[in-house]
Amino acid sequence: MNIALTYNLKKKDKSKPVDYFSECDSEETVNAIVMALKSKGHHVEAIDVEYPKLFSYFSKNRVDLVFNIAEGQSGKFRESEVPAILDYLNIPYTGSDTFSLALALNKALTKKILKAENIPTPNFQVFSTGNEGLDPVLKFPLIVKPNCEGSAKGINKTNVVGNKEDLFKKVKETIEVYKQEALVEEFIEGKELTVGVLENGKTRVLPILEIDFSGCKNSGEYFYSWRMKEYQGNQELGLVPTFHCPARLDKETEERVKEVVLKTHRAVGCLDISRTDIRLDKDNVPYVLEINPLPGLDPRESNLPIMAYAAGMKYEDLIEAIVLSASERKGLN
Ligand SMILES: Nc1ncnc2c1ncn2[C@@H]1O[C@H](COP(=O)(O)OP(=O)(O)OP(=O)(O)O)[C@@H](O)[C@H]1O
Ligand SMILES: [Mg+2]
Image (tube, rainbow, N blue to C red; front, side, top):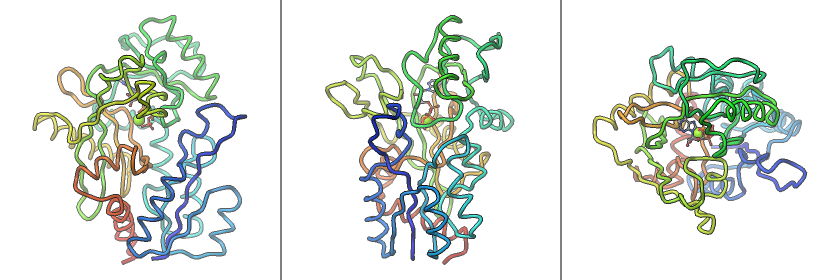
């Protein structure tokens, strides 16, 4: 197949905030996907997405399929930018469509849908100004997050708050720095799980990945904060979480988690691939934190490839499975 890989490259630019490019992809990831596609016999061109280059490129060059991992440029709908252009030009692409990408990027809106579907998600409140009163239903500790970011941007250990004073300080700071609403939700103390769905033929849930932060105590970090994600594996900083895949769960909990994850994938309308982040509470209830329709695909560090390896797949099989799922869906075979 003639495939174009669309991506946004992580850049080094000291004039930007330290987390500015966190959502973007590294050269290693881009190269790994190109190699994987080539190893399966595809012709590949990789395109770093910069407006208006993308529009003119696809107006002139026809491809069979776009392998899309582009995070987009800016704003609440950034992940939908490339799919919207491709829809307009009638070019098929891998992964979720414009609608699901925009929905999943809005955590609060997604959570409203999950609640309506009886999928457990932590109780929450959205703050637009920071002058709103706190919903008395919410029980401390609470966590404050930008409503429309990923890669744990704006999420540090000080975002977990135990009283109103710290809460409102962090809410105002989040609104000010990230220029968007702040999402406040109950902090679920318990196992951290993340679960991949790969729709190749029959929809399948990959082996559940458990991330254990107990070995990171000396670093001061204790959950998947921005620092934990950004410097994951750094021995000197002590940011080396332990991965267990499959997760250490009893059969009943494992089944419940998988069921909740598939329901979430379908409720948000995700296609081909997704990764859902979960916290188990003390009664083993799986609380969905969010769903990622564009999960990281770094062959060494990202969570979803780790799950694929645990399922016995090689990196190139994972990439090809995404291509096959999209091709079948679009009737390209
Ligand atoms: N309600 C919560 N209870 C417990 N931990 C939480 C909660 N919300 C977030 N966290 C912690 O913060 C991390 C990042 O939160 P979340 O997944 O919502 O952000 P994100 O920026 O969208 O992440 P990603 O990097 O997966 O895109 C979670 O993986 C978890 O460790
Ligand atoms: Mg997450």
